[in-house]
Length: 178
Image (cartoon, rainbow, N blue to C red; front, side, top):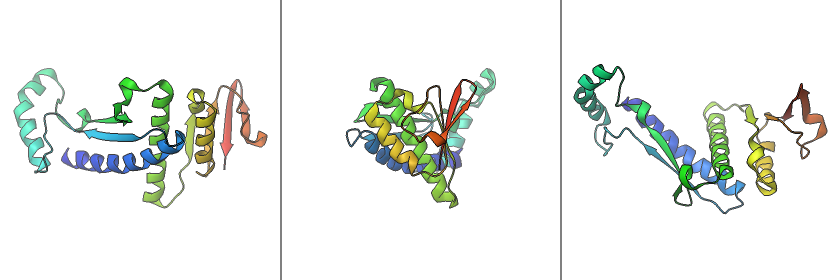
């Protein structure tokens, strides 16, 4: 549990930095993204030994967990909170802004995988552009065109991509870039 929590916290810090850059690009410099890793509330990460904190919390909750049949303390209870311009995204953001945050995180994870492996991952995007206006779509396309091989699915034809990139499968549309 301590290992997972520690490494997740480190990963979120990396993703926050990269996601913030992507969201700034998508919003043309207007929006700032911050991410907070919220660890298990029963385990205080005060800089001390988190392993010992988990052991103590597990011991304290063991009887209750046996009664209800599942673990109530641990990294499975952790969360990542997103803030756009200091406001919690899930409460204050529009659907388009939430979608922009998700795309920013996905691109940040793509970058993290590329850097960790030295390989260029394949990017898969599903109907992401439905919630974007022209300016956001243009900014996203700039990023996608730089990623290597990208697969985009859509229920509509995407006229801003080259015709030779389009593939139709039944009523569905797909697009490959790269």
